[in-house]
Length: 217
Image (tube, rainbow, N blue to C red; front, side):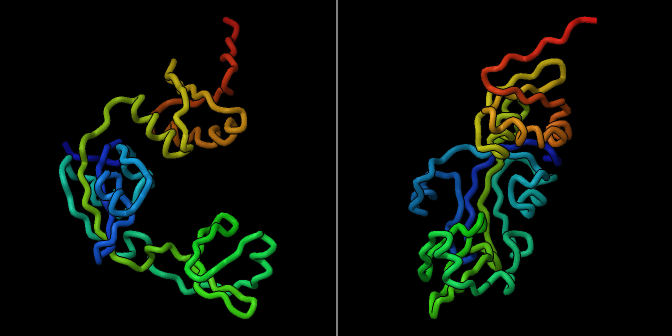
């Protein structure tokens, strides 16, 4: 069974830096080594759709189920470090945002994650590079199965895009998803992507509202 682009697969994986430091996993014992409170759970994703590292997806296309050790250089992992992303910012900017930076602290700065390098003389040097930028990484990965059930695929795709387990049904080649009122317009933005991957039209319904029945002509 050769894996192809747009196949949904379930994997177990652990990502490490070249010196053995675990930075990501969905395996219980490795999560414990990370001192992570995250729970081990299956990871299902669609190959070639940017749901995982491109270097991993490219490697798996054409492969079969089974275990793999995948070594990636920075270009195929988290990118090279960019000196332009190390910036000096006045302390008053942090004060205005009610942030109190200290060396080594990781902050959410206007939606961007930054590591504080130094704080001195009313100025703060921060690094907006991904913490893994410039590093070789190694993934120990097992492809457990290829997903065939459409409902399971849609559930995994919803959880990836929206971090939600929405109720949905498929009817007359149309996917009907029930979401909170504030999510309706956001979910509708992905109509073309659902059509591309699943071959289904998308109708987004506000939770609690019934689908309007069109009169028969």
